[in-house]
Length: 169
Image 1 (spheres, rainbow, N blue to C red):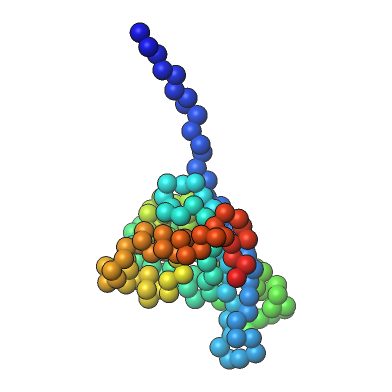
Image 2 (spheres, rainbow, N blue to C red):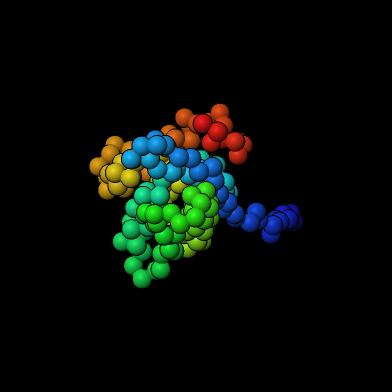
């Protein structure tokens, strides 16, 4: 008679998201904006790539929230920090408060199983596709799936995937 011992120990899933490194693009012009680095590290089975890093701007977060609301049914979608066209006080303070609010938004979104199952969220976090390309991919108007888009992005950045410095571009 043979007995096998199996260990009940399983690795606990984690999702770490950091919104960091705000950068002003086109500074000094009428169409300047700030984009943010989104660093994701996880062992969750929900994600295709275990480490990723993308840059997104505020209006892309606004788009994502609207998309999540559209498909989430009665599930509440976390709020975004407000958009202030005229900054009161230091613009550095405003950018930092917005960065914190964007991070909180993403942290809350990935904790909700309904939102976490939305492929648009995954493409937003793990590919550099534009919002129109994300929509086209999800609607089947591209010859690649969401998983393929994420894997292609991960492979194209394979050299830096193992460290947090992956977004030093």
